Image 1 (cartoon, rainbow over the protein chains, first blue to last red):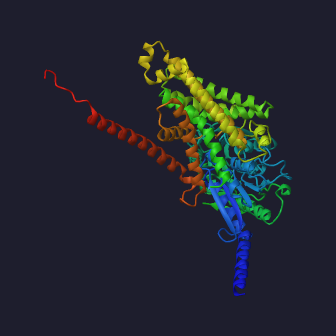
Image 2 (cartoon, chains in turn green, purple):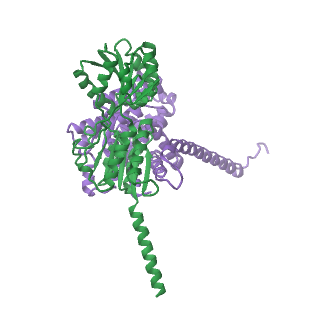
Image 3 (cartoon, rainbow over the protein chains, first blue to last red):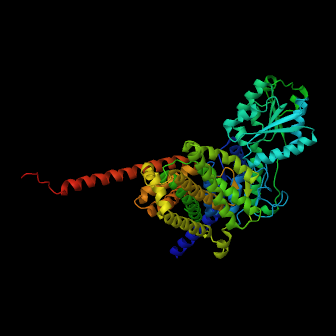
Length: 319
Length: 311
């Protein structure tokens, strides 16, 4: 009798511990390379999951792998994730998302910081992804940025853009920028750099040909913002950015979102999917709020006069 | 390690086995450090992806990727032997040029092959979408490539190629055109790498302009690991070593990724690669030294005693 009671107790104990283990969701997260913007997205995702009650080490098992810039390693990470059979996979950047998409099977995949998810064949459409893959895009409305440039540099006719032609995200941004520029009667002059070391030269080649330079959210260019800033200071050429972090590093102004907020949006979508929502009907998220960051010191150095009204509307003014 | 992780390691290992055979031809047989590989790998993937997206049969598209890789090898060889540019620089020039060419070929930096027919589609249908189907197809491709390479290196041209790499002066004396051998070797080497890039893009479901970063280092690591584990006494052993070396390397990556046990993480991979290659080189050197010592000892012990003349 005592034995049976013990066995029953043990069984119940085992069952309840198994049930507890079942409640712990496994989330596998991967990204192509360590980079300030990507790491900010990652932190946002983890924090948003925590806010929704999925805390790493307690109510969630989080596996994180960086591909260290290597596509073959990204393939192996995708396969490894498939073997771990997580409840959800998360990919930051286009190639990481594409790698997970091809191995995930029916496991839901949430991507983040993919500029053109339709062009990358991750989703059927922005409104209705149609399969197990959805997430957030870092494409931002570019019209307001061009209007900002016109308000600070009223004489501007030609805007230079420095970007890496080898980055899918950047190419789609520049295409969108050209469409918007037409509406604002501006002309876009392109200059490409395939490595961070070439960014300064690419910016220098625009001196004399443009009235201002706008940097897209391009990881190659953002790694070398300081190089562009020094060209702008020497040539009195105003430099604008698309991410707020570059303003603290010396660009005059940016109407950008921060990647941490984008990560939080992706994390919230991930939590909804863990809670039972279907990714196939969850529209691709984009951030609508754009914070204005101003750097007065750079503005003076690059010959830009900032009106007081603009300073008042800025989310952050760096002196 | 899960079975999925193992299948991923097998796929990547077999693909890089092809790269390793290419690198073996240039670095080991011709003794030419050829860096074209970092460009011809993504070129193979790019050409195949464009062809598949435009509706070409995937097997023809794969052949096209292979030919594209071979053309890149031809360019390096021509720069090197006809224009007399130092071979290391010739390879670097082609590799740099290929970055722009790959972007032109694709028209954009990234082409997704998701949902298109690839060379893996028939095998996947045959095995009912088993996780091993890609690996089976890749094993077939790698083994056929290895056997063809073994056969070629035993033909008259193949033997001439090996002789030319080993001793150009002697080869000239035997009426071998060294320049032509470099061209043949580079075309063959980069053709194999182009094929690898082509099947990589298809197995991964995407061709990206950044596909090739570090290809030559991993290929060389595979060659060296293969030499250390199987030796180089026979050509068929050396080419088998390329496959084995690449598989071992990728298994190591899988272990590093899997990894709570060893405390390794993906970011440690580059260090692990360097340590493994250094260790493999030292191990094979130590083995040679040990073998040499044994030989000396045997010779000293059992050499027939020389009888001094005149006694």
